[in-house]
Amino acid sequence: MSARTQELGYPITRGTIARIEGNHRAGKFDVAELMVLAQALRVPPVLLLFPHLPDEDVSINPASDVPSGYQALLWFTGESNIFAFSSEASLRFLSLVRKYVDLRREFAPALIRAHNQPEDEVLHAALRDVEGRLGELADTLRAGGAAVDLGPEIRGLLGPEYDQLDQQLRGVAKDASGSDA
Image 1 (cartoon, helix red, strand yellow):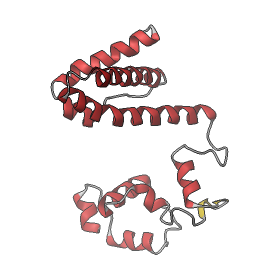
Image 2 (cartoon, helix red, strand yellow):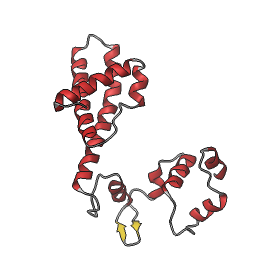
Image 3 (cartoon, helix red, strand yellow):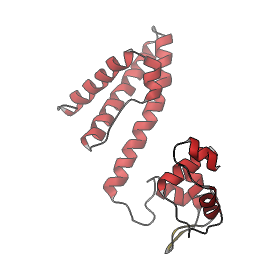
Image 4 (cartoon, one colour):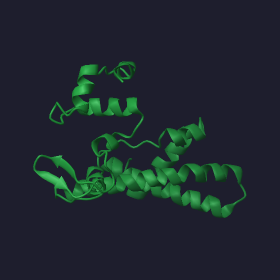
């Protein structure tokens, strides 16, 4: 494991890994260690934080227990505000981000289908609808200070056409907001 973390560019010694595993660091390790260990173990980082999903109790800090790993996961991802730790604005922002990510997932396969079926007007209308919703959400997120990019999955599908589509989506966002995106 230590050698793998070295390969990933953030070496964690065998001794440190043993202390983490034995909980001899009082449960403390930094975010960089979390990310590197998750990558080295080939697991999502959240499984290192909440290994007993979905229903075992979880202590998220010494004074706060959560009745299930699932509820802790929802709080961690901003889908639940069980402790009222988060502001409503931050929860709304994360909700918009989730909608944007979901639309990106919907957009890529629709784009492939539309490319392969140029005569399908229903499909092209649905694609234009998704493009419009993506543009509106992108504009809202950018207005909130977020960096918004179509993502590698769509850029990979489009190749050189990516820049053209990105400009179209920015145009949709600009038209929807009445301002520069």
